[in-house]
Image (tube, rainbow, N blue to C red):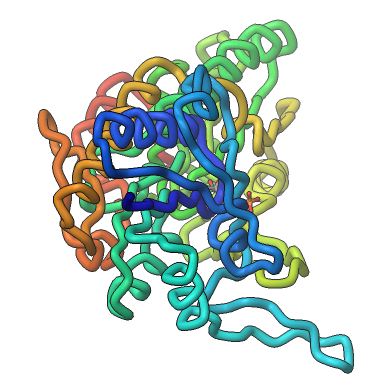
Amino acid sequence: MNRVLVATGGGDCPGLNAVIRAIVKRAAKEKNWEVVGSIEAFNGVLREPTEIVVLDEKAVAGIHYQGGTILGTTNKGGPFAWPVKRKDGTWEEVDRSDEMIRKLQYLGIDAVINIGGEGSQSISQALYEKGLNIIGVPKTIDNDLVGTDSTFGFQTAVQICTEAVDKLVTTAASHNRILILEVMGRYAGWIALNTAVAGGAEICLIPEIPYDINKVMEKIESRFNKGRGFTIIVMSEGARPVGGDFARKETGEVGYHNIKLSGAAERLMNELKSVGCPYDIRYTVLGHVQRGGVPIAYDRVLATQFGVKAMELVIEGRFGEMVSYQHPYITSIPLKDAIKRYNFVDPDTALIKTARGIGISFGD
Ligand code: F6P
């Protein structure tokens, strides 16, 4: 019997469970493959005692519509940077990758499927270079991975944000207010851009197009001058003024290497006040609501396609690859090509033109 280990790494994302279920169901069609899962990314392999669970059809029955991941996940540490507390109470990071590969051999693991974003796929590539039979499955609500047309979870996040805009419109209109919605996406503006178009926002601020606060104010004035006394602004957590930096905060969490973006909407409100904006302003930071709950049908379908393809790559022995959606095909690309750069919004992309075409201002 061959054994494949599945791990989910990085921030959770609607659709992860649908991928896990699809892997198990596809493996069940073979006589010689069984599936196990590592709890909390690769921590389950590295911990003592090991935390590995059997994933059979019973274990994954009906999980395709559940949010989160039944395996748990983490965006801290990992096999190449395992946090260890020194005697003096400070922390150091230890490379446990060789030990992990030995442990996988000991556990009889023939292949690994690592479901995760850019950080997780960089780990996949590094493990592949060390000789591990590994396949990557792309995951992120941010849609910032290159090498795949889209990732599951993104459309669900956009849906959640759009529903939030729908709600903000009625209260903004009732109070003649400016309402700012800050959404996730890290350094990519895809969630904000899609939400602004779907929700009918007047202003959309994204990291790829730094905004001029005076231009933002001009657009607001044009709204209020027309007598429609309210404005909806959808902004990315990574949006920044011309010449300004990302709004961020320290988390102080051990092993957390990401920059925590935070405070963009509050900063924008203060900037508007400082240029004399006379209207009431409120802001909403949607936060992790965007990653929670059930995946919409589109994401369940894409996740299922990714899971089946990942298992087929394992069966074919095509390691070092990442599953990829390249319309209309579910295919794969070398992991090394998937981690080279990010998929940012090109200011000339079609959806930006569409947004400008319906009068959305990007503050530029
Ligand atoms: O990458 C996914 C994402 O949700 C980003 O949009 C966001 O900046 C970040 O993760 C939040 O990370 P955490 O869950 O560590 O707060």
